[in-house]
Image (tube, rainbow, N blue to C red; front, side):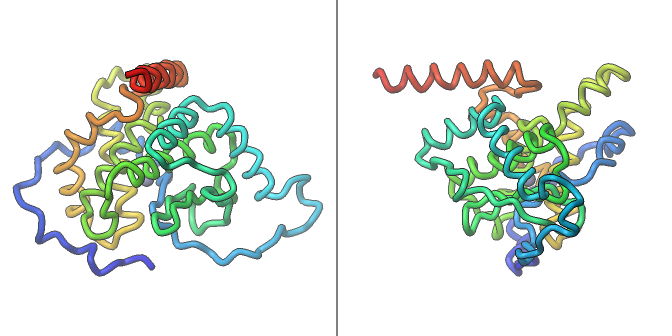
Length: 258
Ligand SMILES: [Zn+2]
């Protein structure tokens, strides 16, 4: 399923790439983390039940389901995205649109556009905070899929745009950002982190060169980095996300009154 032939449509891209400096040392360090997302993961066959039935009280699948439930009910990023999708006519259903599965490698999750399903890698998501970030990241892809006709496979820039938005808005870069801001005062770190993560996410799912991925990200970066929908701002932490959710609800109320 990977390596769609159409992915190599570099010939369709016009214009020179916007040259940016190489990632700073801080940017490289941020990348030591694993790639948090795979848009079209190679899904493993299911039916590989728990090994050793006394190894833990809950199976990975049960833990995944419980953490997912808590994320859906309490995380402000996720609550906003769910509201926004409902508002756009794409109501999300826990049973229908999420699937806890074992995944290859260190992938945390993915969005399967063919089924509109979010895959959560139950063998790699070990904490509630991680679950929150993965669900947020994948819901941003689902939101993009809902609101626009995204050519995930035929135009790598569409994928690049959604990866930039997901890295920018999900908090993928915010944690790292806080640490580096504290220690090194690097104002540009967030932007560097978003760009690097978007490139890594693309390379995880497309058989293209790093240069082609960088070019695609650079071509869309400015407009997609500044597209904060449905948050209206970069939600650097849960408090921001709560404000964004409140603003979205007010916006919704305002629209429905006119
Ligand atoms: Zn992604």
